[in-house]
Image (cartoon, rainbow, N blue to C red; front, side):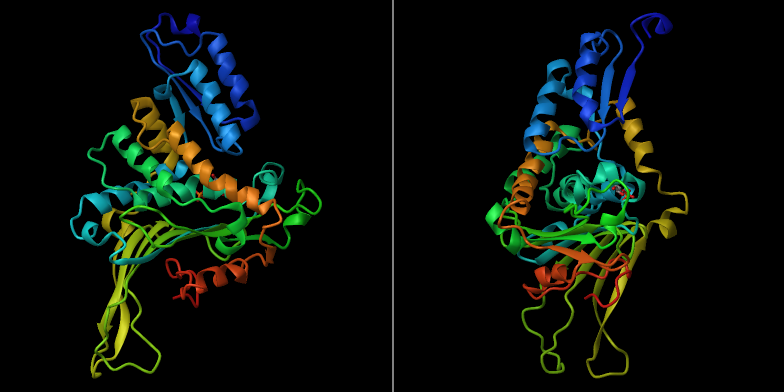
Length: 390
Ligand code: BG6
């Protein structure tokens, strides 16, 4: 490469889209061969997910990477952060003045995050069977969404300012103890999973998870954050729904035992990228009958059909520019594993909740509905995809 580049001004990106078991050796050998030493050109290393298998291995990988690379040379990719709609979360929250005053425990009742997929594990079974939904989707993508919903306003748009606030969210989340997993989590597996080539006979790998977290800080104390993700579900949809508190008193006559639906803000990450706000409106020509109506923003309508680039386009451009805002820092990765590890430990122990089987094309095991119903809630209907939701 040196011969081909001619002098030491060339820049290099090494993109490790390889089996995770090879990351450590590859990085060490790049170091030994002097290939990450920065002369007049820079050297950056992009590391794909999964970054570690658990907290210990993530720490080990971070330590190995730091042996030969400065943190500023490492770009841990989570492609969800490259999604336009995910980046828009910061703009929506902090470039508008309307929502921030109500973005807290005084006004928000609970938050739901859904990352549902219709695809099953297909030909990726030999990778997926040792990983499961917690490591494949929750530890990274879903936790990243949670951190952007819950973060305090960063003081600037600089990578470190944003990454500091996200790391603070992770450190404020109350870990679910292994002995509490049956109370706070649900795990599922679609029925045909075990018939897939590459899946170990009798595999207990979960392809679906639903869980409830609390964030112990002033802004979020007592507000449940529910999240769920799964494969072979009824729709491909990723959505964050903020449920606001109901009015303290309803003066309108309503049928016995009913109350108006709460205001909801639905942020559709994909596929119908947009944001909608649901509120009550009076049905015309009635005394005070109410119905849910929506104000909505849709990317395509506002910005045109080609407005949303591929997440990777943006992320790879950022690596070239040296902007790490949309990449995960070593501390955040470890903090996120600190929350996922005890759940996985619980799932492997006598405290584990049953592995619930669900039909492909359904919305996952009914136990997930019970998890949320326990507090009187229902899963959101997700950009209109899920019939029968609230
Ligand atoms: C990947 C997971 O990180 O994200 C896959 O490994 C999953 O299992 C994919 O299907 C989902 O990404 P997207 O962008 O299609 O929601």
